Amino acid sequence: MNTKILRKRITEWGASMVGFGNLDDLLPDELKRFHTGISIAIRLSDAIIDGIEKGPTLTYAYHYRVTNQLLDSIALKASNVLQSRGYEALPIPASQRVNQEKLEGLFPHKTVATRAGLGWIGKNALLISLKYGPRIRLVSVLTDALLTVSQPISKSRCGECSLCVKVCPAKALTGKSWQEKIKREDLIDVSLCHEVTQRNKKKFGEAICGICVSVCPFGKANTCI
Image (tube, rainbow, N blue to C red; front, side, top):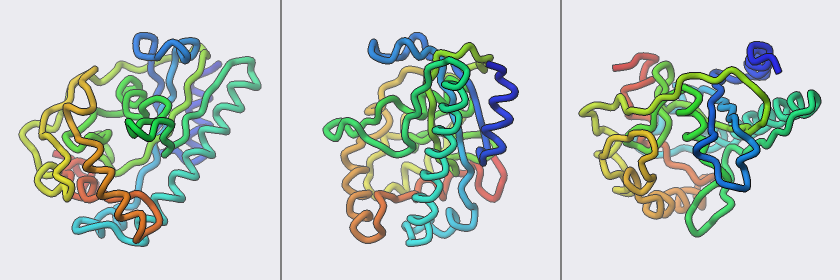
């Protein structure tokens, strides 16, 4: 499979960023046949994200929903292209939990993204890209196709900044800096975050918050620190 052609097609379908990463040492036994991860990101609207600094809105809820739908559509198209060329491909939905007790998906999108060189995981426990900060949504495709992979990102660039920690309404963020293979619970108490997003779901129809996204200096006003 030609990596450049696949990247071009994924971008034409609406992706803002695309990366390819090796996952050989991270996949659980049931997924080890998929050694490569494709990370796909769509940039969120600055105008909408700037409007949620004090809390989510109905406009953000709609934006969140349709962005996830577009991501899933792109992942499905990429998977179909790979399958048509004889490869296996597993699209992982943008916002799906397969383990409600642990609040986990099939495989972490952020892990795929860091391995694909798209960014690091910030103190807000979200992927931070240099170009867009955390103002993105992610989807992933696992495949056995031989693709040219990127250099992984393994360290945080958040530095001393802790704005997201200070404004988190759930008080869920520990303030620790991420590094490769750190445990999620070292960065965030997901149960506390879940409580807030579930309350918001009753009001807005989506399990959202986004305050930590809006205050992050990376991506804010299309600039970075």
